[in-house]
Image 1 (cartoon, rainbow, N blue to C red):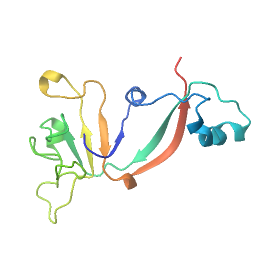
Image 2 (image 1 turned 180 degrees about the vertical axis):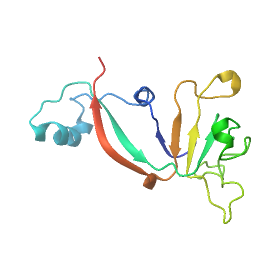
Image 3 (image 1 turned 60 degrees about the vertical axis):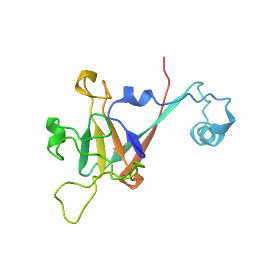
Image 4 (image 1 turned 45 degrees about the horizontal axis):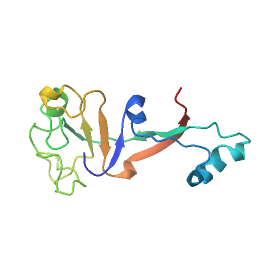
Length: 147
């Protein structure tokens, strides 16, 4: 879905992208020091991390496939369906909001979910793509274990 930061509203979607931190991995030593050693705690073994973030979606473009704007009820309210969601081929900047002067780009993209037969790429969980990191504020680092 282009270049940007990917966020989700569902922990199950986030869990698809994390990798395990094992206490023996040296690349995590500064993190281990901050989270465990300095707190007088032992590293618990296989741990996964995720940030809980606050973000500003601004005026989003909705899409089913990451290429064209969606004609769904939510998508049609911000942009007519069938328009390219990116301004350029490198997929770094989103397209401009229709009928707005001066031209202003969409601030985020919401990738909707639904049946493949209806053109959706995602079936279970929506994704939010933010193209400018300044719109994201990490609030908490969540460490968890899978049982």
